[in-house]
Image (cartoon, rainbow, N blue to C red; front, top):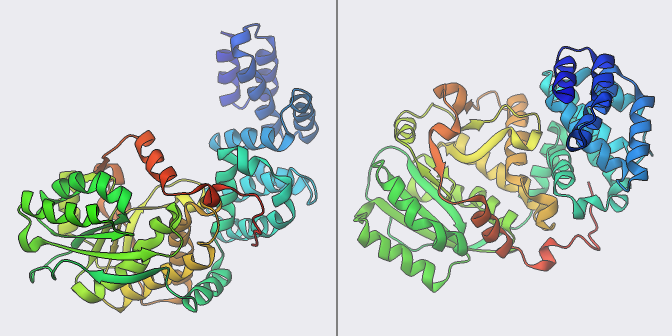
Length: 427
């Protein structure tokens, strides 16, 4: 009853009373939750000294302060203490190991307040600051949550840096080589083409279910296999006959230079331009690990007039704003140019281990849509959740458990691609 009452006081903004009630709780099972509530109250009240005392206690118990602060501020962000997080960032100076943690969460808070330019400037400072903290953050390797913070804060870029990274990537050789159309061109038709792109492991695991689900919608389809095997090629041919797809399915292959899970995820940005050129119709790129609901048929039949469209999440972390599970690219200069720039944006960072660049595709979507909004008055981007009044989950459903997908992703990354030892990371 003590923690429940304390939580109610906390939600009412009665922070000193909430602290007293939490500390009065004698239930050992609630001890950690009570301490978290106490320290969240310190943040909510702007009591930096009180926060520091709690971090010191945790350190005595063997928990690094930067780890403690991360989990505290993540909770405070979820609870809506935006102004307090911004003030805390200003109170923790550069050089302190806690500085990047505070800076990151303050930038997320600014996003939630609609201060996107200030947020992007903060993430940019975080990105450059991590040059000095990278070797001091062993938690990047041992803690997935803090690793996500690193990726969220370093993979997105403000407009000027985005343009520079696109230019650098455009000067690099494509990551996907030996592109080949291995099934004939789709019989002339109308409407969008539903396409998936994945490495052979994912193709062999998911494509039977994906094709069966998408075929029911009645649209033409395309399957692209990265690093194909004899089995993956044969599987597609077998499914054409079993599902009676005839002239409704085309297929292509390519070879990936890096062979990491991140590179496989970003491959579609290099593949879609080639498909737009070969097939000449709008491409709706859909994750291979999702199946279609009837809503997806409605959406594909009534796509907005836009160079690019995708769903958004409304989340506060920048590389999680745009969802890459469904992406529509128009078969004109607008769609073609945009997806080519997405590929260029990704190339300079694809050589890093996946623990440093997973979510790069979503970061590219975030950064490029903002750059185009500033520089391309003729380009139209549409958020599909606002266009339809529905969420991504209304249109697709998962074809596998998270554990199965994690195992496949892990199999795509050799130990050399996962290990962060001796990585020369640069912002």
